[in-house]
Image 1 (cartoon, one colour):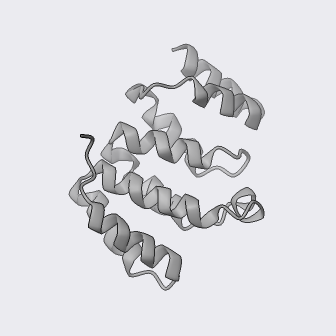
Image 2 (spheres, rainbow, N blue to C red):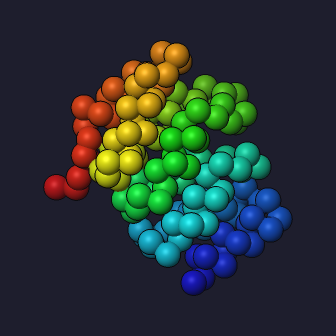
Length: 134
């Protein structure tokens, strides 16, 4: 619960550094999925890549819609740092790792996007789906 409290404290004051630190302490703690799903779509922090990576490792289908939506959001810090497309690709891989029919459908939707990068990453994710651990 210590990590959950640290994440909640970071959210309360919208402290991106504190959120980054709390995320660095995570170790696939599935009870954190709901709060990670929530903050993935918020734009006050710069930890979107870390969050989507953790959600992919947790392989929880409840993250599918949030990850698919996050892939379509041009978060300002990702655009400024020229990391938007890397983030979108991480979203596709997280969806492939979740490995459910819903995540496959989300990848299929991305693969039909008018955005060439989303389309490419959606197709790449479909080729990897389901991406399971060895």
